[in-house]
Image (cartoon, rainbow, N blue to C red; front, side, top):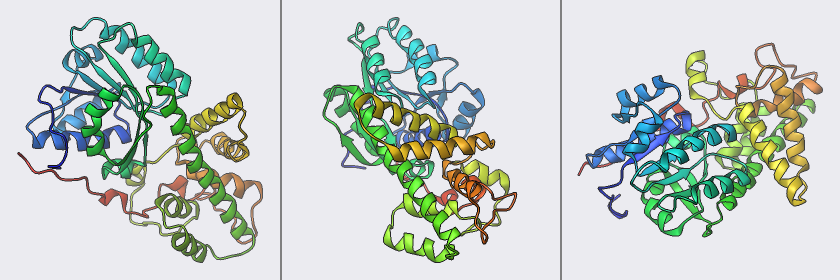
Length: 354
């Protein structure tokens, strides 16, 4: 890391949102800061998560959002949906008007583009503060391994200052070179469309293989050889019951590994479809994926990995040779059993102390 920009001693980093992605990013960032004898401050709606991060990584825990704002001049937010982002930023912007130091806000969530614009506009009367929309791409395992993809939009000077932290947490940074923060939010929806489109394509293709009595393991080997990317290999394996399943894992361990839930998928695909309607684009693949995700949700699978949309095709037209059992009717346990990349063994980067 010696080639990176030097950490500014006056930077005081705060973080709001400790979901699985947030926890992994905070862990890597604090690991780097610890190597420089520095620390960051976190706040989460569920205090127990903050306490665990303090125990595990030594982060400071803010007693309230007010406490975090008072201690921070850089604040990252990593939240589940637009409603959570609106709620938190209403508080943050109000508090920003009460402090005498400047703050750079970095919003990393997947939100609708107009909300990003609104947040920037609400902060505009306080010119000492800066709002950046910088969404991320990657699964929790990528966050843990510091191999995310960051997309940046907003004030160029602030982005340049933040590049050190983006680099610590990622394998790639895509600079949109625009102050229009809605552009990054739109970019994130476009990127996520390619992911959900891949899910729909895999589900349909694997469903065809099942109904044509084509063995699934050779199909998986073909996909891995012909499309050797994590999205294709991980999700295709998740969709096939019993494929490369780590049988020794406990249910609690499988659940702990997590993924991207059906509920969050419906939120993202809903945003894509809205953006398509408002811009005159056509997204028939997103429409199909939305219907399949909704079918899965209606079966009580909203908290499972969104790769289980495969189950909607299985239930609608079950094949003679691959009728799912009660335990596997929605894919490989909603994707929870799969250990394609051995996610629990993913190691975060190490930093030399200085």
